[in-house]
Image (cartoon, rainbow, N blue to C red; front, side, top):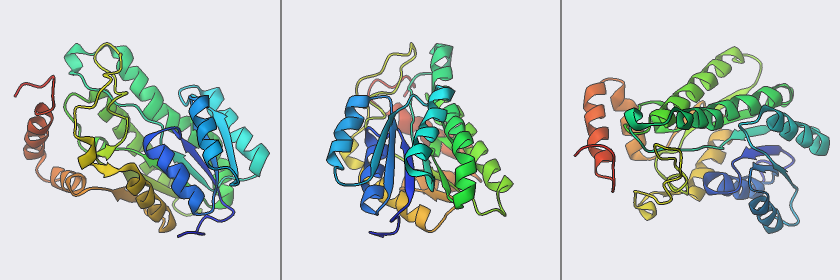
Length: 271
């Protein structure tokens, strides 16, 4: 797949860390010109320097702001004149029981995870239809089966899944590829930046990161899914089992999820 994306233009939100960062590297290695979008200008500049000699554009973007998402697309078209792939990767997590949750946290999760995807897709869509390109939504197993102590996260990912599924159906016959991409547990900083009940980042991960799928492996699976124009990609054995089993044994899966999450250090769930 080294030259699969030669001459293609790829926009990646949440490009400064985790899965987004590795997507930048992997898609660039495959020949694409990459457009890096995130809030951290310093991190984007460092990544741009890393890719020196390859076609790259950085646009500081807060995906919760509609005008900034529109600006991202306008800057991409101004520089490259086309868009072939949009990867809606920017995301935020949380860990708290709903009864303890400040509702501003849930709104923040919806703004980043759901509305960020909607805004970017809305303004990129005319160009993606022209190129018969791909819209990728980096969702979660939590978008197929709600996770306890992740109400805002699960709700935003369920909304994202529904949006992508509807978009796929609306454009079933005009060449647009829409991929719902669920990585499962991945080694990244998403749990470190996850919000607590009052909206402050928890600042640490409750899980053993080194036992999870590396972000680079996730990015390579995404590239493969785009190349094969798959509708859904669900990664990790646990993720696949959870999604499949929950279709038939909802109560059983809920109990398993509860006990799994309750084992986390400082879990808000009772063991």
